[in-house]
Length: 312
Image (cartoon, rainbow, N blue to C red; front, side, top):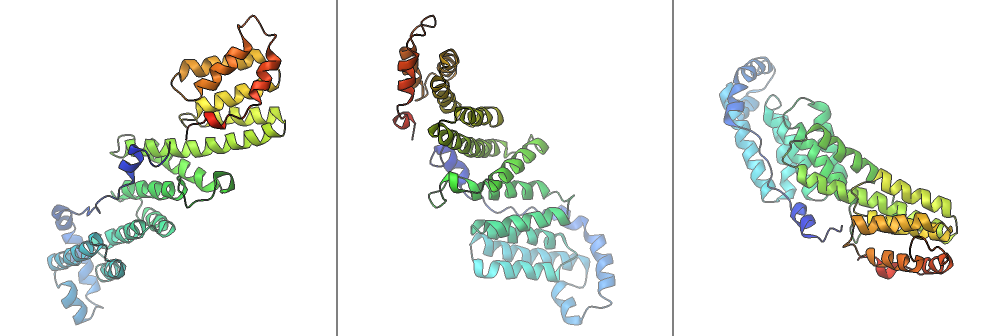
């Protein structure tokens, strides 16, 4: 599955920035803020007190006012001032919830500017510093999105065989972890799509290596790679291609009975796949199951390149 599909376009759109603060949650912090301000007031200057507010209510209202201004700049993508504005909130209202949220919004700004390493680092720092915060699921989802965006198919990335698959495995682990911890999340559908794409990347690499071994007549090594792809990366969308490749390997090993079973399995499970066409061709060369005298012909057919049969 490529990123040009309607589903990938649906999930690639950037979302509105979450605000994640309600008046009730702000008022609930009033007492604690008042205590904190009482102690901080002993060492704070008059100018800072005037700016932040002399009471807990003023402190919260001023923090929200500045946060809303920074959010407006974020939503307008005024990148030059976004991070400084949120950093001022972290500095001036460190006792408020808005200071925490400012950290998330800085990470959001980096994500929406495609500064993925910085964004992922910001989300991870938030989770580390505030492991019990209600925004942790959001931060974890954003990490999954960032890692997925870093490894998913793009014309600007090098060919799959030239990439470091460590980052792909990281994305796989992050996505699976989120789905396990938040099975009822509103993001499950999107994450399952991302999981399918990442599994496809890993399976595709295994098939690439299998073809390399096949070209070198290292049939056992090639078969091991295909088996690993099918068993380790289910739901990758590449099973029809993997089954046909394994049938090709078995034919070259003069094991037509196994090749037949693989082709029949492909046709039974994926009758509409483009790979069903060469599978039927192999079966026709092998003839009925009780006649195996045409194995040589089938093996010669297996040597024919199948690139034309692969879906784009």
